[in-house]
Amino acid sequence: MNIPGFVDLQVNGYKGIDFSNPELTEEEFTAACHALLDHGTVAFLPTIITSSAETFERNLRLMARSIIDNDLRESIPGFHVEGPFISGEDGARGAHNAEWVRKPDINFLQKLDEWSGGNIKLLTIAAETEGADDLCRYATDNLGITVSLGHQMAGENDLDKLAHSGARSLTHLGNGIPRLLPRHHNPLWAGIGNDDLTAMIIADGHHLPPAILKAIIRTKGTSKIIVVSDASPIAGLPPGTYNTLGNDVILEESGLLHNPETGYLVGSSSSMLECMNYLKTLDLLSGEELARVGFYNPLELIGIAPSDVLAHADPSIELKDGQFCLI
Image (cartoon, rainbow, N blue to C red):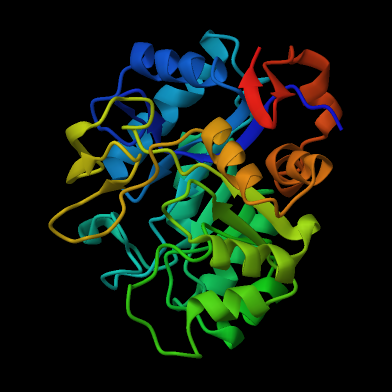
């Protein structure tokens, strides 16, 4: 199964450029997009995390305009809005700013949709929050947005309720949760055990250990797995000390990107190319299955025909000596 490159549904930024930065410029956004598209990613969703209303409006409008002005629509079909309707609890909230977390609010979602020019393809919300089911139904039925569940403390009943309300997936399953959880009743096990929800997983070698990746893949099956990079704005930069997404972070030689004060990861330093090559080393999936989880499944989740991407994209990767390589 041949593919021209990978599809990434969660990209927070690249090469030092942060898509949630209230001072983001069109030139920076366009530069980051071209850099990523030159590195084995053939299509992706720029992701804006929980932000102030002012930043949401400014950046969604700016990015939507830039995509049109720079003829990027075929490679950037829309946005992933990760928040603000997530858990406010430490651990579940991750690197998101507690000040800007909101309860599910259809009126605010309508504003987000307007600011994006109707281009929100994926929305991450917490399943256990009051009103999440109503918001989910509105997003899916009225706006055509795919709803994913993450940054949450949701249990089995919460996930079932949201799946029946139209939610389709789980955002970076196994991450965006506290380090210490109840042994059996927790969002990770609930997510793994839910047959209706597709699991998006960060396969960068740091966010999930091999045994958890194996358990998720074996339980869900290839048809319900999507690899994402969750690329931080620091992705593509050399090791060092940085400030990103409101955190002082360290990027280690190993690629581990973390906040030394909290101990939490702050997104990934990898692109889809690195993630897919790491996953390949685990020998859990065949070449055809890797193409499924890294190209076909993400497009299916957000309602884009693979033929639309295959028609315009020149091949940018090849499988050589057991690794995906840039052509």
